[in-house]
Length: 98
Image (cartoon, rainbow, N blue to C red):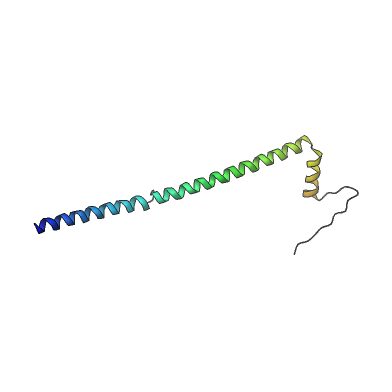
């Protein structure tokens, strides 16, 4: 009777160890759940970045269209900011940052 109980107890311990090893393997292996969650997070971050870049592209396309159409205010703004141009009656003051 005691021998049967010991065998039964050992059997349950072996099953428990096998189940625990299986769970640890499922969670932490190369294709495990934690790796999946990490990859899901990366996919979400990349999708957010894609949306940001698409919005930036739309803004740049709108700017290009306005320059192609010859919108005077846009052309003047680009000339002032990018090429440091000015009108005849203006004076440019440069401020250096320290």
